[in-house]
Image (cartoon, rainbow, N blue to C red; front, top):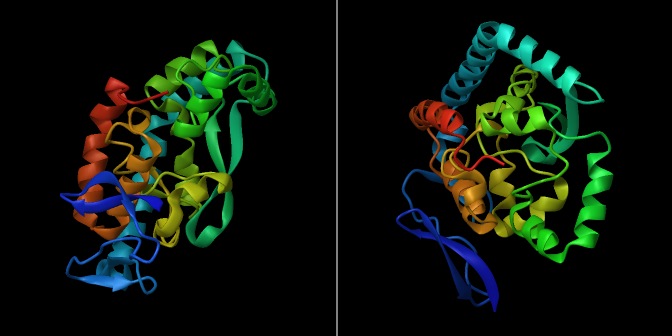
Length: 251
């Protein structure tokens, strides 16, 4: 038997057992187009007008956001520089549209050489290793700096990704970008999730983020792409503001 997430019950992920010969995803919704013989997404993705509208929203929103937040970003950069040794920005390789890798930008929230320290922590603490395997984040990560914890709580560390949006690596709204080793967790829906630009925010990001498990994340990311519309993007952007201020699900 193979474990998978079922998206067929009112849009909520439910884990179930299925024989290997069953279709991996049920996508019987109207107005869908096949990605391959099993996976389908909204036909809106095939509309040049709709895709152009999404890109126009990205460029306008990212430009406005950078101009509006420039004083805050400058203050955050100074705080990061004064708080701990290391660069202001952190660049990490993530997988983007069609599997192309790009360098994701964030304000640095961890100590220098955090990646090396992570492996040491996981080797020394089995419970921490299990938490990392499930969520790809740690609830009380000792690598996070004092100012970094505050930036994460308000998601201010993500704001440099507006530059990624302007460069065309990302969208304002979409599935959150992942590392290549995480793709195996997406299983059969990987082609769907990678068919669009990753987003600064998204359906999963406003639905609890780290308070959800990874199967629930995969279901939400898939559902966003499957049912995408510009109206839904605007709804998610509006929902992002209170989610940022409350820090719900942030780690």
